[in-house]
Image 1: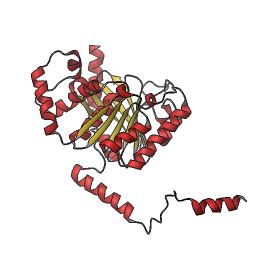
Image 2 (image 1 turned 90 degrees about the horizontal axis):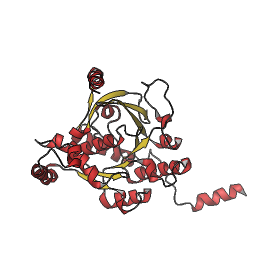
Image 3 (image 1 turned 180 degrees about the horizontal axis):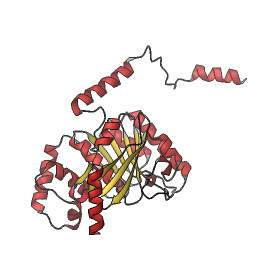
Length: 311
C-alpha cells in the first residue's frame, strides 16, 4: 500500500524541480555568462563589499547567497552592513536595506557619512548630522542634490514605522523594487517570539529560500551570544551565533566582528560554503567620519596602542 501511495504521488506531483543537467546545460551556462559579464565590468562576479580580503576570498555575494554578519551588541554590525551597502550603491547596484531598530533618517545620515567621504569634497560626519552642529547646512543640501546624479546605484531604506518586517514583506519589496542585494539589520528582530530558537530557525530558512527564489544575495546581521571564548583575543565563530544553530547552518557565509579598540575592528570569515574560510583581517573603524577600511596588522596595532594611550 505504501509503495502504491508513493507511485500515485510521483504520477500527480507537478511541483518537482528536477532536470538532467547534462541535457539541460543552458541554465548553468547562462549563470556563468552573467558572472563573467559582472567580473569584466566590476572586477569580480559578485557585488563588491569594500573589504578587500572578503572580496578576494568570495568574489562578493552572489545570486542566491545568504550571508550573516555577526557581532556582540555595539560592535559594528550596522556600520559593517552600511559600509557594504554604500559600496554596492557606489558601484551602480540597487540596494534594499531593511532597518529594524533605526529610522530611515538615521540610516540615511550614516550612509551620507560614507558616501560623502567617497564622493564629495566636503565630508559630513554622521554624529554631526545627528547633533545638527559643526557642518555647513547649505553645503550638505548641495551634496544631497548632486548625489543622485553622481551615483548610478539606488539605496532604498525601509524601517518598521509601517509595521513589522517579515519574510513576506521582504519578498514584496523585492517584487516592487527589483534590488540587486538585500540587507537586513538585524535578523532576530524579525522574530516576534524572542528566544524561540525554532521560530528563528524557520525565519532563517525562509530568507535563504527567498534569496534562491529571486536569485539575489541577502545579507543579514545577527548577534553573537554571551558564551565566553576562553582567550579574550579569540574571534567568535559560527557556533557562537545567538538564537539558533539554524542560522549558521542555512548561511552560505558567516562573517564575525570583534572590536579590538575604539578605532580597530577585527573580522573573520568564520564560514564559507563555497570556498576556504578562516581568514582574519583588521579594519580602521571611524564610521562617523566615513572611514571603515581594511588595514594591515601593523597599522592595526599602532592604532590600538594609540587608543590605549588616549583612553
